[in-house]
Structure formats: C-alpha cells, structure tokens
Length: 171
Image (cartoon, helix red, strand yellow):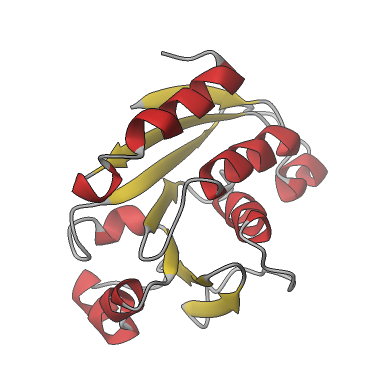
C-alpha cells in the first residue's frame, strides 16, 4: 500500500496517467472517499488517459456511463445505491468479464462483490479551508492511499508501485 499527497490537479492527473499505463482489459478500479475529495476529478483524468475523448461527467443519477477509449471503460457511481446487492443489476461482473475497465466511485461499498482483484484509491481532503473554486476544480491538497489487491495484479503490482514511488518518493 502506498500513501502520498496530491498537491493539486496536476498531481491528480499524473497519478491517473501512471495508473492508466498499467490498466488492461477486465481491471477494476475502486475510488473511495467522502464527498468532494476528488473521486470524480480523478475518474475524469483517468478516463482521459485511457483515451476517452468525450466530456466525462459523474454518473450519479444514471449510475453507469460507458465510454470507448483504447478499451471500453465504464464509469460507475454508486453513491445513491443503498443496498450493495442492487449492484448486480448493473452487470458490472459481466462488463469486467467482457474486458471493460470499470471505475467505481464510492466503490468501497462494493468491495468483494466483483472479485478479489482491484486497485483501490482512497482520497482524503487535507485542506480544511479551501475556496469553492479550488474545491470544484479539484485543486486542493488530497491525501491518497493506493492499494493494489489480488492475483490479477500479481505480475504488475511491483512495476505499478515502482512507477508511483519514482514520482512521489514514497515507500
């Protein structure tokens, strides 16, 4: 597990770019953190790094938005889902089996439902007094924890962590 500080949106995009270079068909990315901690800003950057050229918005009300990048990418937001069992209706497991990369905001609610392999990125706001403009743009400091879990990432975990270590000098 790696932990570091993202100073601004540029760092958020750099993390997204670093992760995108290691993601492949059927990978699951779980984004967790309180409201306003940067999950959607990160998801937007990650999808852009995966070759999505469309405007990426939060799928809070539609739950799932699908995009075509270098691979199929599905952006899921389960903030409004009360019962994790309801997630089976979204066919996330089938999307993963079909080779889609699936990015789930509020994904800590779904841990264990879609296999034992995932990358979980947890966001925590560090700046308690941030302007509304910086909050909306994502240009506030965030403490981030990245956990790469499961056999699917066994051969990639070391290089993923090494690439993040090079950028943020973390252990």
